[in-house]
Image 1 (cartoon, rainbow, N blue to C red):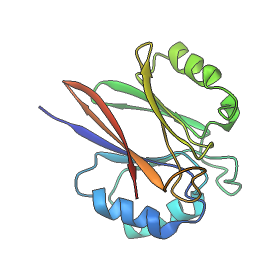
Image 2 (cartoon, helix red, strand yellow):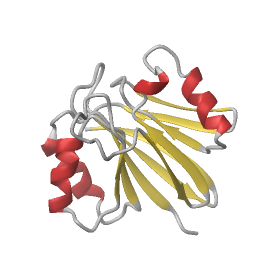
Image 3 (cartoon, rainbow, N blue to C red):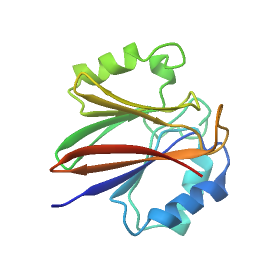
Image 4 (tube, one colour):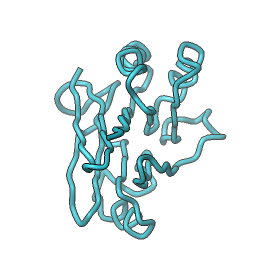
Length: 162
């Protein structure tokens, strides 16, 4: 059975070393890396160190120089539709209802967001929701990132503290 490991990163805000360490740790076993914004500068620098990894990025509210990056994007991995966004355009600091409604309207299996710097993961109404927290400035607890395993058996999400 094939398993796809997706590493989810967000809100690194200049924490290049932490981002580098996570990518180094998972580069040989991850299908891809998804950065949910507010880390364009360090993501751009990482491409020079790891040119062969699949690294997807969406623009956050602090990514002023990332004008060519989308605010929301979609991937299909292991037959599952993943929508990912920074979250500020969906007002995630106040409620997740706009974000989850958008995900349902677009038939997503997984919705990923950042922006709040708060870890969050749950499954509700056939939708997996994850905010991996922040690699740069967590608002509570430790710096963190997410791991999603997608296989024929299902989807498993975990948030890892560093």
